[in-house]
Image (cartoon, rainbow, N blue to C red; front, side, top):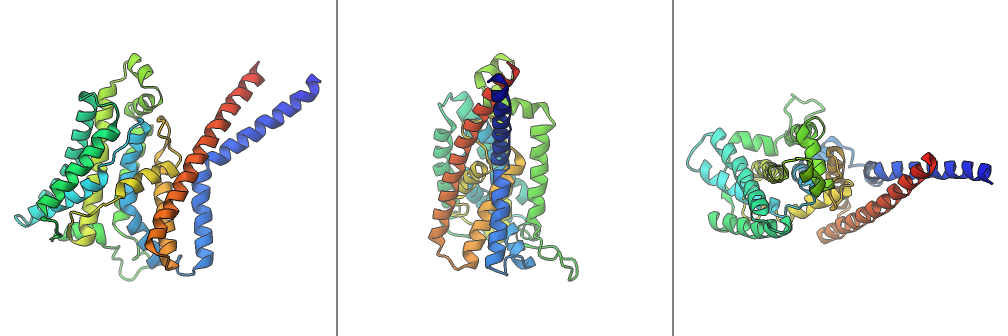
Length: 345
């Protein structure tokens, strides 16, 4: 009987490992399947111009998702990023009305994002607020109100040409087939590389996952949890400021209503990418996959002339499926650990 159960246990263990591997590769497989389906249903999808549109439209979501990823890994959430896009763009446009210096305007836009992020982190950590949801929900409202007040509720027109180029222009290669690639995608790539290095090649990255995985154990191990958390929200604000820069360049100004509901898109992208609100899990690649999944879904619905409110429904359904997939993955991981213990016994 023991000889018979041995192969059965081995087969079950291998099946569990395959199932777990499939679940972990799920976000990328879903995006690939989605691209195949859309390309088969509309020939326009794989044209250079449309792919450029997908890249351009997804850039802001991807930037926010990178910052949101760091926050969610620590069991937090940042609801203020959409409002930060608005305030940073409005202040940048106002400053541009008084100076023609691109450096100054860019500094103001990105600095606004970092400032909002620092406020979130400092109030959350040193104010001993139970959860970052409360702090960032408050700053969502405060910052949006500041943007509306500063811009008098309307678009503040004008940003430097360099910002317009970064946010709204594509490569100029003299008629090359690469003319459809927007400059904003290079900004996304640069921030993604920086986040990748932070999370995988630096001690801070190990601290990040320790704080998210088990905060109490991290404190006992001597990890500076407070500094890590403040830094995380400052980096989320930095990402929102850069997204504000891209948005300002795209619309050639600062709008008090810019970034509306972008915070939900960024959270959805991270969750679709396989991160969990329980913390301690998530990576840069999957966050980008989640962002582009949202971008492709929206682009596909636009190409098929689907009403915009169906887009919100579609994204909501995808998020629910992603959350359920995370539950299933956690169950499979538990069974794999049990199976490993049995094998070693």
